Image 1 (cartoon, rainbow, N blue to C red):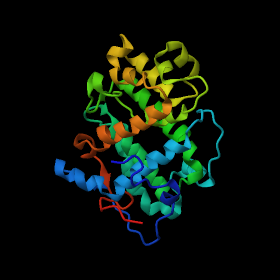
Image 2: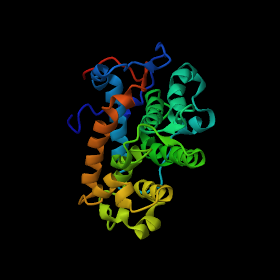
Image 3: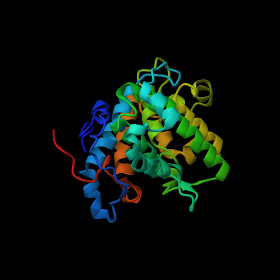
Image 4: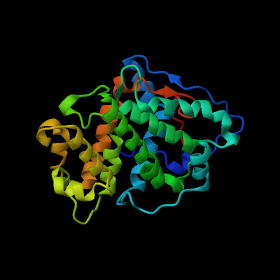
Length: 281
């Protein structure tokens, strides 16, 4: 799949749905491996990956401490989650939030749960609660806070990685903060990919950069040589530029998460992220 294929700009996602729209409770549609074709052709896939890539552009070259505006609608989100005039959308949007905190029976968590939270944010954009002006706040404020909560849960309950690929996976639990975190570091004046395996560089800069915060969390949770417990990341540290790291991670995310049946079989589709084929134009 081409890198820029079917990218949907965030400002096209933030248009409020028509008053006559019938919101529905999202449900699973991917039941067998051949169903993956429906997913990759769907409006949901186009909207979701477009949302991820738009945020990727929005945080490029910016620290977590970057000053940003939050729209009035986002203030309402903090206070009331969804404004009363959009109350009909709440049951549909809430499904993705509920799916984002791991499985209460298996006590596991993985990139599918992470994708559910990103889908939750995407839906908030599609109903107009979050806006294009909020793209930096979506990553730095909302998604970063979500990461903090999930890390606390992972530590407290020793959650199992859902569908872990072990040492050959990028990370036991997350993927998106590596994409957006590498975008933050593009054209950094002195931090290069080789520095994220340097303990001193990580300790001095992790509060500003999502990627380095991820590396710090890994080193707190795992013991032994980094090259052994995080082999994929170790290999990435040899890539010459953050731009190439970012492009490679986007390709890897599509291939290893969005195009894997064990992950997407749990994704749910409704009126905001529909399974029907992507509309042209």
